[in-house]
Image (cartoon, rainbow, N blue to C red; front, side, top):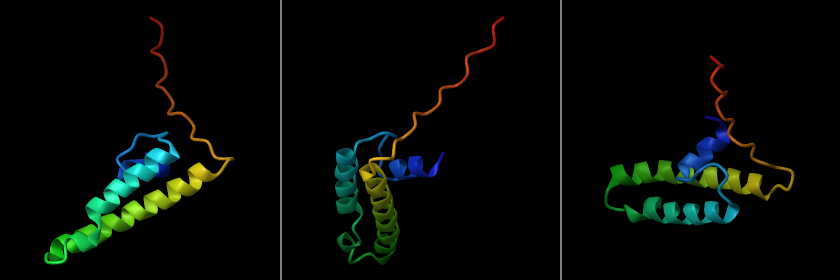
Length: 85
């Protein structure tokens, strides 16, 4: 798995999702994992802070990449055909 695939995975998206899909997924996850949702549970708040940082980083990287007109996501290579018998 490469770096870009990891960003998509963090946002629960498949490789090649559009910028609009990335933004929608980010907003959903940001609401779900925002640390302010867990003010009375320090364990959950710490976990949410880490998750929130990961989500923000993934969103920022994908947003920058997908906004770059020179960037294109190469398709996932298909496995080679089986050898002839």
